[in-house]
Amino acid sequence: MIKNLLRSLSRPRVEEYRPAFKETPPRLLDCASAWKGHELIVADLIRRFGLETRSCLEFGVEFGYSTVAFSNYFAQVTGVDTFEGDIHTTHKGDHYELTKASLAPYSNIRLVRSDYRDFIAGNSASYDLIHVDLVHTYEVTFDCGLWSVAHSACTIFHDTESFPEVRRAVADLARRTGKKAYNYPPHFGLGIVV
View 1 (tube, helix red, strand yellow):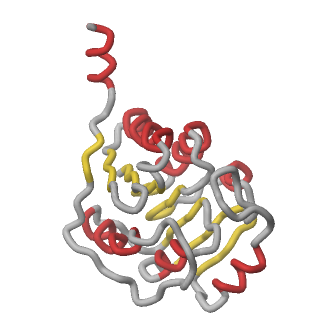
View 2 (cartoon, one colour):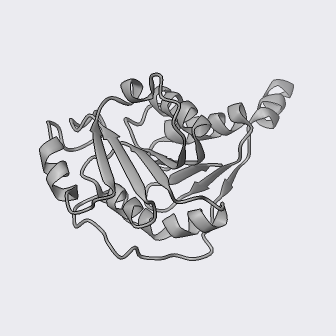
């Protein structure tokens, strides 16, 4: 009993995120996406946490829905993905050229075909916002998230409601880094570490 009490006290409290307002970005990509709905709170995140809007980094682009949503608010968006799908995506196989063509009209988006581990190796760049939406295991989310939290003012994580391991990684990242964690439950969940 005492052990459980101590364990619960050491866990950070994940507060529910309640946006003050929702805004539809002027440009959105017309494609299927589990991220639909989160584009409505990007402006609220920027305002609430006083984020600069110079740069956004996204780990896990897939077809680019969220990437285009971010491009409405950030001067430069870098999307990193292998573009081959993973165990949790419905599309398997190389879709780099398809995504690249879909995102070509957005001049402030740069795609990088890379595994996140190769991208972060030796990378000391900082970003105003980082979005993590990779394979939804605890290990990958925590590993990529630890680098991301250290290199951004705000890091967000998709699928906290669909994948308990992602939600647990978000809470553990906040505890490990001394930051605050939020969870926005709609649209499969969005974890926020700031």
